[in-house]
Structures are given as structure tokens and as C-alpha cells.
Amino acid sequence: RIAAVDGNADAGIHAFLHVDAEGALAQAKASDERRAAGTPASYLDGVPIAVKDVLATEGVPTTVASKILEGWIPPYDATVVKKLKEAGLPILGKTNMDEFAMGSSTEHSAYGPTRNPWDQTRIPGGSGGGSAAAVAAFEAPLALGTDTGGSIRQPAAVTGSVGVKPTYGGVSRYGLVAMANSLDQVGPVTRTVLDSALLHELIGGHDPLDSTSIDAPVPAFADAARQGAAGDLSGLKVGVIRELQGEGYQPGVQARFDESLDLLRAAGAEVVEVSCPNFVHALATYYLVMPCEASSNLAKFDAMRYGLRVTPDGDPSAEDVMRASRDAGFGDEVKRRIIIGTYALSSGYYDAYYGQAQKVRTLITQDFEAAFAQVDVLVSPTSPTTAFKLGEKLDDPIAMYLNDLATIPANLAGVPGISLPNGLADEDDLPSGFQILAPATEDVRLYRVGAALE
Ligand code: GLN
Figure (tube, rainbow, N blue to C red):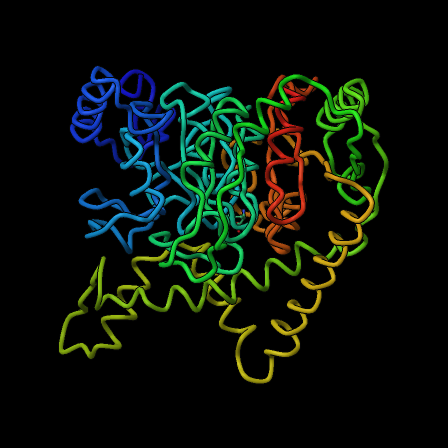
């Protein structure tokens, strides 16, 4: 299927940056033997998976879709990749993304964009457009993504897939090339809610190699999905977030969303409106916190340790080499965020920007706490629009950032979220997404409610 539809940077879906056919076939063969012997390593033994190119894979290139890591072959596996291997899932390859996971369209990849399988003139969302497109185009039944501001949920929404951002700390970040440590989470991209639950159970859990990982047993996500599939939500209280609908939301997206609220009512849930007044500041807060953390993280790409090294003519100093390498290795969006982050963290501006953003972040967390004191889950459209045209927002960073309006609050507060396929918008016959958010460590609610709506 990959050979038939994936193509390359110029044509086709281009979900993959690297296909590891040999490795995947060897893993599949070993899985066949375990299955034949009646000793599968897990429920998902033998089910192939695609992995976002932001996760380290031993012996397999990991570029973060950046020129600066071109040719880097990690000597180790990310914890989640190690878990996939132990559970017997053949790893098909590495999926395309916006460079360093910065973007909402996968157009910021240094290796060319991924195309939306529903309409190849449109974006597949971002930053994890490759993982979502691979699932939507039937190139992989399962994929891993990462979500710092929506990079699992928004691509899932615009490709008609299921995507889950787990509770912060629920899944190990060891071996994930960090964009913004306090926001990043690894999670599943799949076709069904139960598939996500099964995959989440497998990759979740405490990891001593990630100091922010939660030290508690992994909840029974799959059981929650099976329970929800019975379709009975009586006693459940659902809050519709007032600030995440209406103006700026495409009418067809809003209409499908309203229909799903009716489905929730029909399943016995009580649906009320809830206000989260500080959510209107979420985008501005995120686009300070995220670049600050990213500018600090990306300082390690200095051409000395790994990846690209450009040596200028003459007798260059170490600093000349670093400057030339970073200039050639980073794309425009990455440079933009390094500059914003460095500026906002600089002496004299720290309190005005980063310090202020952290305070607003606390207010947003408090909005969630107040809302979850009234309701069990919160809901909104995942993304304000369906997939836009390739190139449409490439020269307008603010328009690009606005895509993350509804997904960012969850990252700032560390709460879990799921995006469900929510039908096609009437205007353009393209997929829209339904987002469910739950309190931290209550990811089971996403699976119960998600499976009931499916
Ligand atoms: N689109 C958002 C950004 O550009 C989110 C990215 C992400 O979740 N990795 O920062």
C-alpha cells in the first residue's frame, strides 16, 4: 500500500520520510512465529505501526524533518519505540512532520509536504500530518504522534482519524526530540477509539528515564472503550466550552459538532454550556511558552555533537561553524521561534513575557479545574476549519497559529484530549473533528465517551 500511494515529495501522499521495509518484514516474521506458537507478545503483536520522525529509533534515521539532523542514526530507541518492539509491532518507518514539530500543516518539513488523502491539494494538518495521513490512506493501521499544541488531534481531525493526547506524564518522553518539554506528549493516531485505547495502554506507564512521567499503573483504557461502545452515557455531564465555538468556526464544522451534541443527549448525557474565560489568551500564552522552551532546547544543535556540520572557508572558529550550520540547517519557522524565544527570555524581558505567560497559564489551568468541578468532560470542535489548501497559509504565521485555538488549552494545563472523526462539513465534503477533554489522569473518560459516540 505504501508503494502504491505514498509517492514522494513531488506527488502522492508522502506520509513517510523513511520506510524500513526490511526491518518491518523481519519483525513481522518473528511475530508470525510467536502467533503460530500461540505465544503472542501482546494484543497488537504483528500489527504494523508508523512512527513520527521525532522519536528516536535505533539504527533507523531520525530527522525531525529538519536538515540539521539529516543522516543522524540514533544509537538507541525512545522508550515508546522500545515498548512497541517488545509488544511485537513491526515498525513500518518514520512519518513526515513539520520541522521540529513546529506547524499545523506539515508544510514546514524540510523534505516536502505530506498531502491529505481526502484531497491531495490540501494539507493533512500538522505537525504530525504524516502519521495521520498514513492512517487515513490505509498505509498503516496505527501510528504514533506527538502533541505539544495539537499535533496529534488537529491532523486526526482533518484526515478523519482518531487521535489522542494523553495526560501530561502519562507516556514517556524519553527519546522524543523535545520541542517544549512542559507541553510535549506522545500519543496514538488510529482509525477507531478502541485501537487508540489498546495502543495507549501499551505505550503508557512510568519510565524512570523521564522525570515527568507519572508513577502509577496504566488505567484500563480498552475496558473503558468497550464499556462506552454499549452507548449508554446516562449520568454523564458534558460541558460545551463557550469560548471554543461560533466566530471563526466554519459553519459546516459547527453544524456537525452540534449534531454530535444531540447524539450525546440521545445516549443519556446531560449537555450544558461552560465558560472558560481565560481560553481566549491560550494562543498568546502558548506562543510565548513554547518558543521559550524550544529556543533553549534547540541550542544543543550546535554542529559539534550530531547532524549537519557546515565548515565555512578560511580558518573558521567553532562559533563560525555553529553559525553556518544552524543557518543552513534550520528552516524559517524554526528560526522564527528561536528568535522569539530567545528575545522573550532575555534579561529585562523575562518577567514581561515568559513570567507573564506562566501566570496566564495558571489561570487557564484554573479554568479547567472550575469547569471539571461542574462537568465530567468538556467538548469542542477540534479544529475551527477543515483542511485548507497547500500553500494557503504558508506566508501568514498568525493564520497558521489560529488552527490551534481549540487544542492548545489542554497542553497548557496538561489534561488529556481525544479527537474523533465527526463527519464531513457540507461546504467542502471534508472531515471535521470532535474534541473531548477530561481532567488530568482521567483519560479513561475520553475512551468511554469517544467509543459511545463512534
Ligand atoms: N501547531 C502547533 C505549533 O506549531 C502545535 C505543534 C505541536 O503540537 N507539535 O506549535
